[in-house]
View 1 (cartoon, rainbow, N blue to C red):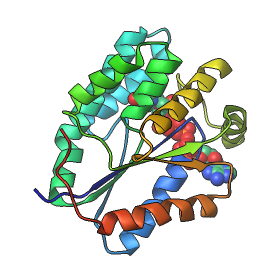
View 2: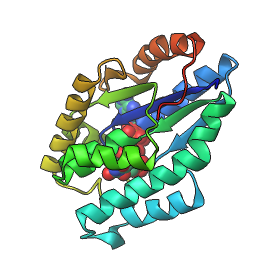
View 3: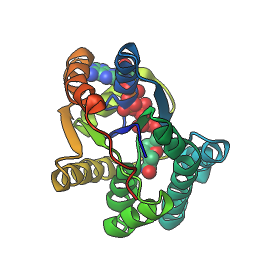
Length: 216
Ligand code: T5A
């Protein structure tokens, strides 16, 4: 089965994922590839409904395991209905957040078992893993200053305390160290154009390399 490429962007709040996702999508499109731009949670009607539930301040106090199941449910729906078909068509999927966010936020942030959280997501997604995951690493205090400057209301997870976001950052580092072939770690305090150049240097060769089957 020929397949496209699955690229995810990860990191804490305000690290610049949306900014880099847009820049990368443009540069890949400019090279003639068909790009599918996605985010999680979301991407399907049911996924967007779950996004509302998990991010809304109205869900304050949501049980940590219920939260983990909701993110995994949205992911299962997204992979089955959108991501896997796009990869099978040969498209390049560039996505803001995927299962590493669950391991970092629900595993480390909520202090659930990281292995169980990863296994839950892999089960939901029938084993689909990205070809490349870009970790945009930024000190949470610096990221918070960016979000404050944006002056948008914080969602339920953004509003978590500083120690929550420090645990999330540490968990992303651990994930990147555990799978160095899948992860590209970039210092997100650099200017957007420098970060984008680093991403393109890794992604463009990946697109022209030989294709494998979808994992799982
Ligand atoms: N979540 C998600 C889980 O808990 N478990 C899961 O399994 C999943 C999938 C998603 C929330 O859900 C949680 C994690 C999140 O809390 P979201 O709305 O998708 O919520 O929020 P984020 O992904 O955190 O998106 P943000 O918009 O907060 O941050 P981004 O996308 O990282 O940052 P961006 O690009 O919007 O930039 C933020 C600001 O910084 C500026 C931008 O212009 C903008 O003003 N900026 C820079 N400034 C200086 N230098 C740079 N290099 C800059 N890059 C961007």
